[in-house]
Length: 255
Image (cartoon, rainbow, N blue to C red):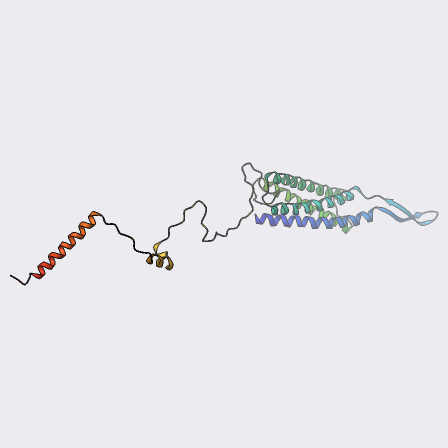
């Protein structure tokens, strides 16, 4: 579970950073490529002259700008929402299903966006690298973002199918019969003086009596003793045997 959380954090943070870089590079290329430019050309009557030429930004560059902004929003939501709802308490099955389906769709759509971005640029270049370092960097980051979102899509499918375990909202198992993950409770045992409910207290050995209890037992007043008939007969027989012993000792020296 911890390994999956670390991988998700790393991948989503990388997506967020790469998308910001891609947004900056594409914005620079868009401002350089589109707008009004002064170009000079050869005129047989006037020689080299300057002319203002208006060019539109290519559609693929605008689409890359949109994909970069979309990726920033998706990455930020995927980072914040699971952490926020998990910190609030137990994640319900409905919430987990909504977030899980949303993450899977979002990761898949974003991976398709970046696949279309770099594939279109490569096709325009004819399968070769461009002379512009900025355009080559845009292609490289587009490929990385496509691979990362493809990996996130696969991890999300494995998590909701129960292959990978996680207690994050949106990544818990959606299989029937699977109980929602409960927040971790404290494993500290209860104090010794607290007895669990529903159980009888353990008997106390005689050796465990305190000194105060022993003194209290010694200071108790003597109670009246009751004798049964058998005990009275035993006392009488003992007295008779004692009298006979005294009589024999007294007359032992006489004929």
